Length: 376
Image 1 (cartoon, rainbow, N blue to C red):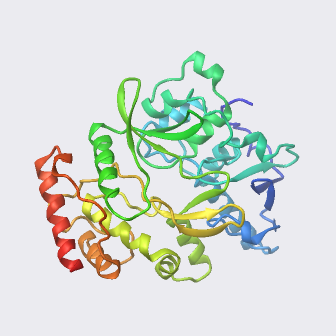
Image 2: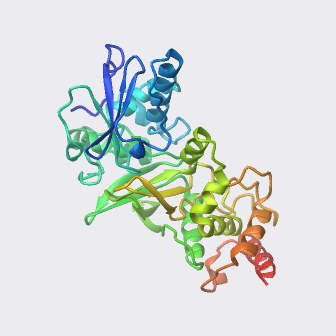
């Protein structure tokens, strides 16, 4: 199978697609919008179908399907997105339907979960397309991390799964999945500031009692990148708060209450640490829940990660606007609320010599002192 997008996929009529969870057919969506839901409890959290012959319901089903597919494809604000899309022969489109075509060309695969898409009469199983078991040769990394044209040699080695992991990974910074010593890692670049910020923030977060993703220093083609081990697997997926928001909205559930009932401790620790390290990128796609793949049920919030936009909006003690709540409050106010709820939970001291920048060091310890005083 070519790594290039099948441009005729939607144009010639597609009859139906199956939404798969490993080898379980969860639902089927027909070209006219009719659907069959085989396992309601195994539906993706951001996909909602109505079993109705009503025209409006069928149109909504199609729109919801296209949206779900498009949510599994990188966005144009990703660095080197244009280069990636050019390499796979996809247009730089913004419509959900056209982006859905890109996702479907790669069976809707991502390394965040075990859902995938199977076309009518396709005789394949999850084992045929599974990204977790694929070699992840790194043949596409030049394109994803550096925006370079793919070499003829890499093109010969590149398989659909090499491309699918990177195409299906969201976020703005350039990144690529590779396999080293049998383990899957994400390499992330951006610029030297972002890489250094992620590495320092990761060390600081380790000094608190919270589940987090450790980042370490690595190099790709001689340039420094941050590296972290994958947190999903065949057994565990993740679902973003953005998708949980949609799930709650469709069921008239209060979103923040839903989160706090599931894992209030991790939620409050996220607000504490984002304030301390000045993380300005905790948008709704950047935190969420672990999912047990055997049941498709939510567990606690997934490990705190993605620190490359730390130490920004760091010129005042208030920080930026808190992104994890609908209320318009500062990161400082959100952190103070959190400390009063659960305490500071610092487990080790943070050496001053970790900080190369004096201004950043002074602001960090000023913020830490504020929270220590609130915790008394």
